[in-house]
Image (cartoon, rainbow, N blue to C red; front, side, top):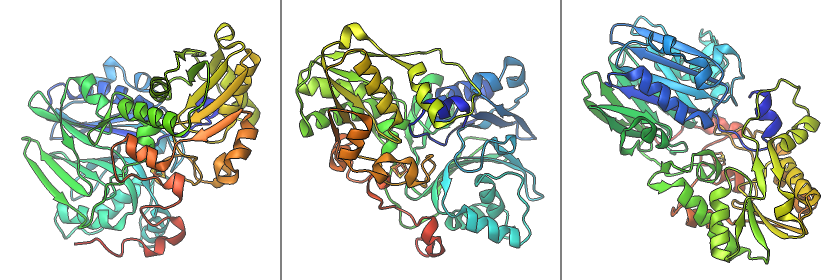
Length: 471
Ligand code: SF4
């Protein structure tokens, strides 16, 4: 995580985004725009590996997509097939060694690999692999999967992939690139989104559908839970599954916060689901007020829904500074709190003497909410009713989101009333878990950070992992 993220985000951060191109003539250019559209999923590093079916070409580095890639280095990425990655590190740290995609050399065939998600049994698997002689170059859990794939060189590649996938537990969307084929793999719980589209006779694969619009591709379908989709250099597809039992446990936070509003996740538009969550929040917790305010940008859709349902005007009482640059100040708690002020400003002439209904998408540490409320009060707001378009985040996420301890979560250690007092709101209400399911029109989602019921084994009971669901 860079310092600016740490300063300004007392919010959750997504781990990564992946993008793939198969059989498209200007692959490196398409990759660039695809990764650019996924920039919100990771700002720490970016990389592309391409192939012309004879050899691999790599460009990767730390920084934003437009900092890592240039017209000159994109021209070195030969071939019509490529995989790419934007990264925000939760597992592994921010060293250059962890920048993806990785290129692995092996006598059975070299391959590139990148990953969105987090393996919950990576520690145990790494220890076992090291005992049997493996040496790791990075601290990323993605490298563990590469070692598992090449553990058994006697079986064919698809079987080796199935065996490796059955050993790992957690969330993943993997793209693996050999010189002749792209392998697309999604975990059996379908915790992270992954979709495929057509483009100029070839295919593009993306963590989010917003990237398809950016490159002019036409959505084809979502990759299914537990699916291994293989596309060869001629564009032939082969679909298989590594698990008998699969589940629709999409991460609720993808709808609530992570994904871009113009993305569709498993058939549901993200903006539409957020707006509906706002409407449901207004029905669940109505309150009188002069105006509805949103915290830019991720709570805009929910605030629109709340305002529409409550028939209360929506205003831009909080303005975001778009030109916040990078800083390298040590990220102390005090500086993090100051950072909110640098990022947002209240508009006194709008909010003075007004009763405000303030909509946000989530509360993590509570520092952002506290600072925003302080800012609004300083600007003259009379009352501030805070409404959150998600349930309280009470439990850590093990699937690629940067909350690994309860201490980081104010709702994990405090009641709603205590949180209200801590952030100094007049009232505070959270959307119900039923409300989120209704807003996304789903009967199943991963809601673990709200409920503590995890769809996989976690670090604590990982010895029991992968005892079922195998062919
Ligand atoms: S625990 Fe929360 S953030 Fe993590 S995958 Fe589940 S819903 Fe998403």
